[in-house]
Every structure is written in structure tokens, then in C-alpha cells.
Image: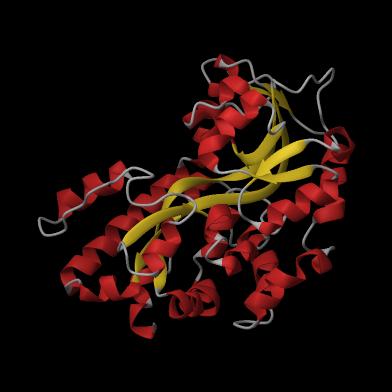
Length: 333
């Protein structure tokens, strides 16, 4: 977010930028809603929490739809995804995503130190009955419930204390926020089951974007595109070096410094997580989400699944680039 501000101010003297912290104007529980209603022009939300007010976004969280970190942003911003999803989305809610402000990473399960585990947890049977904090997304609730866990809705700001006090035994999220929000000290172990890929997006009011001059909007589009590409390129570094998603985590990583045990899984163990919740084989679990998006495009989930596995997806985040961007579609909305 600060890099976006810096680059915009370098490029334009007429685009004043103020970055306001969470809770001062909006929070994870209402940011997208405040943008959609016109209270603020631009705001950020994680994909999971955005589903509270943009329920169709659950389509991006369907378990095991995106096999790699880069396959999510690649599929999210193809020309077809803009035409088939984001343009109808913008017409319905009056907002459009203009920036990727969090590296796309896999979501995992994190077990707190308050839970007395005598072994490393590696399979769904190991989490049976555990109280696990989830985002507002119903997809997370469905997955945790199917595995035998007990999904708990808890505001993000209360999660750290909830882990300390035993209100919850663990949570589902991506690992970078565990480190960034200083939750790693209360985490005993992480189960790298890669159940979903996710990111956070910056949403802007379409009518606000249209009020900008052609030059301002062109600059904003160019800068948000370059920042988004660079954010995606950081994905491997964030996951592997800064956070430490390996066993053992590398020296100097957030997990190593906080003594977090990293449970990597064999193919057989990972299959135990995939088989009961994979969106491809268990569409009946997610029929509400698929049906909502089907009102816009009946075959969109199949398109996501196939595109995320196509040869056009870059092998590494470092090779990622965006071909189609929001400014190309403003006139269609």
C-alpha cells in the first residue's frame, strides 16, 4: 500500500494519496461495503472477508481450484475473467478491483500453543473437534466442517487474544498475516494443506474512477498494474524466506524465530485433505456459490478450474504479468 502511494506521487502531482489504517475509516468487516455504498472511494479487503458483502467472491476460494500461487492472479485477471466476472460484479456493486495489495499465497491451518498436541497434526482426523477461527467466507466454514473441525466466526482483531485464551484452538489463513500481525508467538504448528489460494484486493468506486481525468485514470491504472505485478512476484520470497513455509523453516524466517513447527505433507496425506472438499469432485458442497455466479456465467467455475491448470499459467511468480486491467473495462460498466 505504501509502495502504491509512493509510485503514484512520483508519477502525478494531482493524485493526492492518503493511506489510512484499519479501523479509522473501515475494517475487514465493512471496508468493501463502505466502498460500495460510496462512503469512501477506495478500500482494501482480503478475498475471504470480502465475501461478507460480495458473496460471489467465494468462487475464488473454492478448495484446490488453484494449484499454484501464481495461478490465482493469472486466472483472476484474464480478459475472459474481466468479461465474465468482474464487469458483471462491477455493474452489481458499483466497485471494481484496481490493485493486488497482498501477495497471493496458499491458505493453511494454524494450531495454537494453547492446544496440547502430543504429535504433529497432518491429516483431517487430527483436527477433529478443534475450534478453528475462519473468515466470513462460507467456503472456509464448509471445508473445516467437512474435515471434522469446528469453524468459529471471530473478528480478526480478537483472534490473537482468542488463541491465547483458548476461545479458539487455531485458525485458517495465509501465513504472511500470521507473521505480520505478530500471531506467530502463539502458534505451535502449521499444517501446510494448501486448501485454497487467496489474496487481498483494493476496490474502488466506478463512479469515482470515472470522475478522474483521462490522464489521472491512465496513471492510476499504470501504477496499480505495475505494483500488482511486483506484489505477485514477491509470493515465493514471502512464503519461503520471510515466513518460512518449509520443515525446518529457514533461519531468520518468522516461523523459525517463533519456534513454529511446520508440518509438510506427503502426497498421500495431502490427498486426505483434498478428496472430501475439492471443488471439482464435490460441487454439491458449493452449489450456492456456483449458482450465484451462474446467474452471470453458467460455466465460470469450470473456466477457472481449467485455466488455472493451463500451459499459459507462468511456472513461477517471477514470470507473472497482467495482460488485461480494470481501465480497459470502465466504459463497459
